[in-house]
Amino acid sequence: MENLRGQRQALRLSQWELSRLAHVSRFKLQAAENGARELTPDDEIRVCSALQREAERLATAASSLEGEKTKLAQLAADHGLELTGVSL
Image 1 (tube, rainbow, N blue to C red):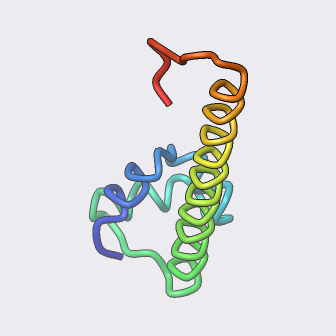
Image 2 (cartoon, helix red, strand yellow):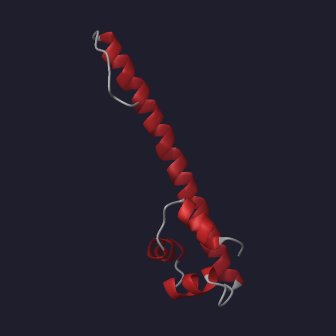
């Protein structure tokens, strides 16, 4: 599996978290990241699926957060408030 460490880190997952999500031993993940061994095809499928699910979860959370930011800005404007110093 190419650049497993980079993919995992991009999603801000620890090896332990990914191993739990993928049902693959942390030691197998560590060895695969270090190039000491390759994952079995079944393990690779589980890891890819777990990475995809986490990416989708984060995208959904980001979208929801954007919606909440918009609601908050509108609520503040409706009440004549200015959100200075607040990063939305």
